[in-house]
Image (cartoon, rainbow over all chains, first blue to last red; front, side, top):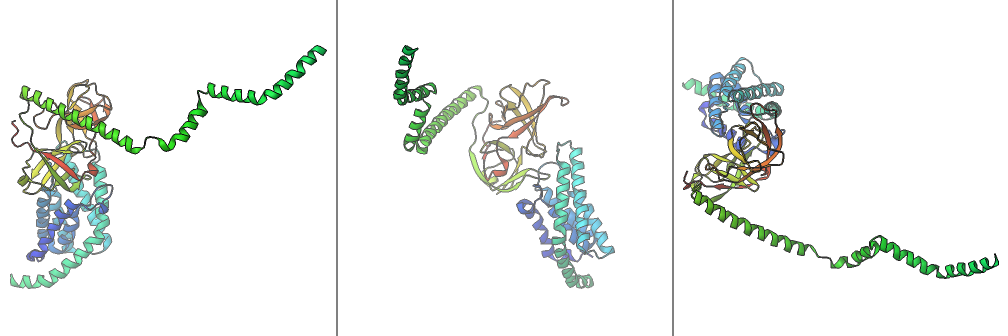
Length: 171
Length: 251
């Protein structure tokens, strides 16, 4: 199942996530809140590559992103679980409809936001606009997901078909 | 009767003959009673081409600015000398100008990324200034970048000073553009409009830097009153900042 991870250039695309997070293009923001680029990258990856690879990819991306942000909040638990969950979903059925992708991204970023809100509560950080941030981020992520995730799904499926069986035979 | 008529007719004639002069007199009286309204307006209208232009205003303003800057510089020198006498701060570090290369102001984190890092001498904890005042502290550095944790970030905590009522408070970021000012005592005597600065006795950040203005005060907050502060530096519009190096400052 971990066919994509064998291709180094596939793994290297994960580096786009922190770069996009830093660049945070203003045109793709909703109420000043940027989409969760980690979710948008992780969803197609996990759907194609299975739960183990998904969880590891989530872990890697979360480590990259946590290094970029101040404070005690961490995206690691949410992305780890999301990668594993989406990997399970992708193994069971072939999810590719735009609506399903949008819904999964919506649920994923809402869950990510909820874990961050929980951590804010745990560390007793004051943030009166937490739920507005969760809502805005979930909505903009879900809106972008059909567009970006379907393209990535196509790319990953093609490369896993091109390299996957051969890699499987070799191992 | 007759004599009366004889008396009246010449008077009416006289009045008719003198009416232009009477009108003129009434007009002059009007001018007098209105404090010269027509005259002054006419003068303003006629002399408009010769009014002092914008150039003159700019000269005056630049002269005023120069005067203020000179006074500010001399006061700062004076202040520094007095502080040295008090041994509060031995020397203030140099300023490094850095470009803002990434800006995250909405969402979970409030931070800037600067295009200068440890190679330029920046270190964690250095205060970051922008036009308008203090905006945050350097949180982490890499060789060529520095990450600024803004005062509005929910993990930011900074001791500040309200000059008018001479009270200390803790400025707590809330993830919005307006951080919260928590006081220590029950009755801080702070009103909306008070200017918040860094503490004059501070050694962590440079003293007496403008931070913001108190917008509203909540006296009912538990355990002590809280105030909402509007930062004086416009975070959305800042492209260049100055990082004041603390290297060499005795702490």
